[in-house]
Amino acid sequence: MDTRDLSGQTIYRAGRGIEETARELGVDPAELIKLSSNENALGPSPKAVDAIREHAETLHSYPKASHADLGDALAERWDVDPAQIWLANGGDGAMDYLARAMLEPGDAVLVPDPDFTYHAMSVRYHHGEVHTYPLAEDDGFAQSPDRVLAAYDGERMVYLTSPHNPTGSTVSLDEIEAIAERTGEETLVVVDEAYGEFNDAPSAVELLENRDDVAVVRTFSKAYGLAGLRLGYAITPRAWADAYDRINTPFAASEIACRAGLAALEDDEHVEAITDLVEWSREYYHDELDAKTYESGGNFVLVAVGDASRVAQESKERGVIVRDCSSFGLPEHIRVTCGTREETKRAVETINEVC
Ligand SMILES: *Cc1c(COP(=O)(O)O)cnc(C)c1O
Image (cartoon, rainbow, N blue to C red; front, side, top):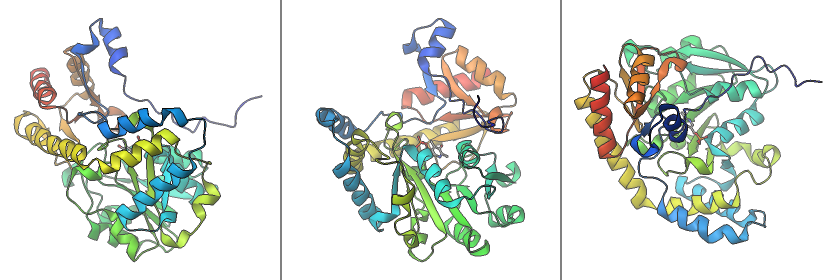
């Protein structure tokens, strides 16, 4: 026997870790810096780490109270009803829940191209079809209403990524609203705000006050530094009432994840430290890299380097791991994560040398 036909599914290839790369190059991992996965340069929130230690002893119980408490805390933070918060195994898990709740087999979903690959993967896993709208370098990879609506053909969901990965471009609330307004009543506009904390633009959650056709995806993986924990959530329309209870895998987020999430949410100091650092690092990349960079609202910057695969390879050999964007369909660009001051300076030096 065999699985169902999986030939149409893509395999997610995460960037290689420091350990693996160090072994390949035959060097000490301490000599390498990894700026290829948009991880938090300052590590996890220390308050979250304490909470994880503290709650290790109670792991024999299902996370009933903590799951509810985190949902309530997020609902309060966003000023929405707790039923609108859909906790999940990472932002990726939240996308899966949206697909579960929305898609009948064969329904289509419109995503940008290039884009974060999991949007399309999640749709395909849930028997949906993927349609794309092209982003263009000459208008800064904008996900403008004109671009989106030129491709729109009644799809069930439309993904916007703001800030966009890997380009860093953002979509304004007015633009999001215009897209929601001009797409059909049965089309959900999903705004992926995985990097939302790294810029001052208001969240699309505001739009949920008056609309039932917008959902927002958020994560603890980036600004909160908890990528290894796997915790994210969707904020969904109020009109959906108990839909989450009907589709979620029981205890979607673990006890440890919920406890850490609750603690991290309180740790404004840590979020402020990383957002300040990111602001500095982005400016440094813009000012000091000899190659062209693009405005970014995230904790990374897209850089036009010509031959991305060569530049990424040679940077790696010099100890700096950056993301070759060829797999995104951008073979002339690399994406470099905002590191500590020291890492950022070393990345600039290395990339300039290699270019
Ligand atoms: C990192 C990222 C996510 C979330 O990843 P999780 O670790 O699953 O929370 C979502 N969208 C984009 C665009 C990302 O870059």
